[in-house]
Length: 302
Ligand SMILES: [Zn+2]
Image 1 (cartoon, rainbow, N blue to C red):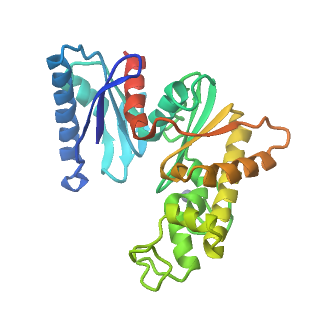
Image 2 (cartoon, rainbow, N blue to C red):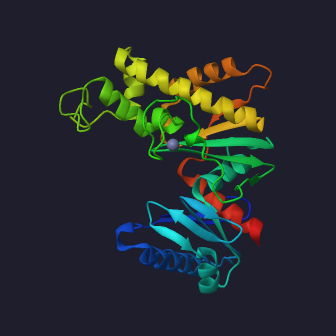
């Protein structure tokens, strides 16, 4: 859990990290969240600050209007009324958001999308998810599940996705998919035991694949190019739907820098026929985006 005290102008005055320990079960995780939040409010008061609102962001499916964490695979939440629990414990106006949507909110208002009214934020890590932010507000969808751009079908009959369908964007182009596909292409098992892995015998990561592609290794170049093409297909679909000014890419894969952005920008622009070309830029807030976005959501909800 990343936690912060944030001023209304978006500056962070204090940060903390705490283990989630999801293995203890969802009830214990909720108790920890409430304890940590209470501790942060106490810390603020001790420092002469006046906490005015609390924002919490969780992964999965989040019903922001109801303040309920509907479903979250990694922490085991099922219909947890987290907003009301936290508001009752702390006595502060509280907002509950979705981790990628609040990240997008922060990038759109304070980060790489600042100054543009229509932003598509895309986080590429173990999965791929997006947030569509218009004039500083992220759309949630009717069921709290908007932005699942990773499950756009880009390669019918392609690799199996975690959702059970074949050929989703994230099955080809997430950081984990890139590492897995490279291991497959080089004959290395998931453990990298037969070679093709990293220098220490660990499997090559997506960043390693980017390095090797840049160095001209054919297998890496092939996997990387396929990922870039698939991402361009997914982002082009996003642009067809949303007609944004800026597409902001964050998450682990954005660390690849120009090795990702240069070919991706070219491939995306190739796909724009009558659509306006969006700016394609790297996220600017890094790790802090989630905390800042949760704070923005809380301030908006006051
Ligand atoms: Zn899928």
